[in-house]
Length: 231
Image (cartoon, rainbow, N blue to C red; front, side, top):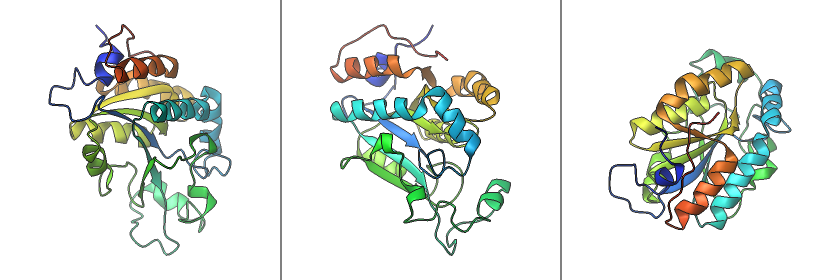
């Protein structure tokens, strides 16, 4: 039986003490101009994002979290011009880092898409290594210091980044909720399969519309019947 989203976001199903009320944050993954925005290195990813309305939905979730006084944390990727601190240890890195300007720190490519802002109170956690945002960054300490135990995730890609974020988060003791119309990957049918067959095993899946309602209810310490695991 699906767990009501409002219970998850209110921390009622996390199984340990809560230090924030409610204990959740919106966490975005690589929603950057040079990844899936107007300067995208991956045109197919930008197309997939536009098809599901990812930019608009992610913006809605971030704005609603801010209105409720809840954290919005952006996980980004960026690289130095001399590539110091970055190891080309994957075929993906070997391919994209051939471009000298790929997600170069200090350039427009590493900026967040316009739908996200960012706003002054947002937190940005960059990385210059690997394919997921926890290992070797300040993300875990940042979330724990904010009292966060539940992550409401949006971003790209379902193929690697979002899946890696969710796995790392669960291994670190967080509970994960994925906004299914605010994430994407390609090919689109593969991304849908990852959501249905992999992410559904470790995260609650829900649409933005339902999440906005559940966020409001959880923030007011009420209960509701909105349920997750909907593709």
